[in-house]
Every structure is written in structure tokens, then in C-alpha cells.
Image (cartoon, helix red, strand yellow):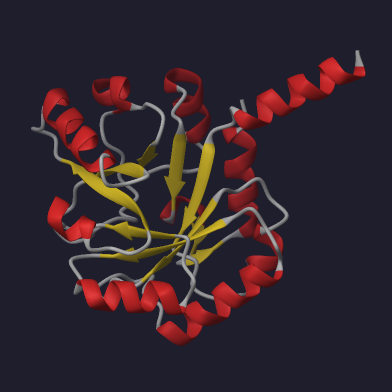
Length: 224
């Protein structure tokens, strides 16, 4: 009976929604984050983003995370950067994944030396089949894709959701849902559409800074 219970518990843990907390800017939260049920942490190298960090801060985060011997994977966000810069920085910082948030082509992806997460931005007028084709195309070269809300002014972290009901059939394995997620609505998303993974940034912030309380609440409501 004990073996069965252990196996059941392990099975449930394996099937939990994957969680990515994006836009970490310094080391102060790393101690707390490594105690939580988080799978990925994102650090932002997109210069136009308010969550942009320099290589020195990124190095400190990487070293702190490595010292914790945690399962959490470190992801670096880039947008249409020169490939040589992406490879140089991601290798220097020992990133686990490179997240590409711009208009990077398949040929561009082929030149990236780290594992890839590709962001796909959803515009209201896009049809399901069009998005599905993009997902299948990018998953040939990427480990995961992220479906996020399109914005003219930002590559992510807008706090705006897309139409979950319209695109729910796309929430398959290796696909993260992002855009406007927060502790108040994540439970509805999990209950209604059971996404394989979720990605949150602005929804767990208070006055522009990451809130450990909001992150804990987000995780709590993510648990099935």
C-alpha cells in the first residue's frame, strides 16, 4: 500500500502544470523561489522591456541559482538579437534555455546553441489552424512554445489575456499559456482548460516588483 501511495504521489507530481516565473531582476528572491514548486525562471535581455537586466545582474542570478542545486531551469529572453550575441551570453551565463520573443525564423533557430523556447504572439484575428501550424513548425526546432498576447508596444508582460476558449485545443504538451495570468484567474484557467504549462510575469508583481506572496498564491491556485 505504501508503494502504491508513493507511486500515485509521484504520478501526480509528474502531471502538475509546469510553472515559469518570468522577469526576475536580481538575486533577492532566489532563496525563496527555490523552495517553491517552480520549473523555470526567466531573465530578460530585451532592452525595451522594463524587466531588462544587464549581464552582471544576470550572472549573479545564474550563480545563485546554480549554488542551490535546484531543478529550476534558467531561461534567457531575447528578441531578434544577433545570434552570436545570444550564443555568447547564454553560454557565459550557463542558461538552460533561450526564449526567442521576436520574429526569429526557423533558420535563425538552427543557429542557436542552447535549447529553445519560442514565443508565439496571438492576434485577435488569427485563426486556430494558423497558430497550430506555427506551433508545429517551431516545435521541430524548439523544446517548447509559449502562446502570449500580441502587443504593438511589448513582447510580453502586458497583463492582458487572449481568448482562452478560442485557442484551448492548442494547450497541449510542450505549450505554455501566457498573457494576463495572475493569482485571481489562474485557477479558472487550470480548471477549465488544464494547460500543460503557464508563464507569468506582471501578474505576480506589486508596484513593478516581484511579490513572493503573489507568486506563492499563484502556485497554490495552479495546483490541481
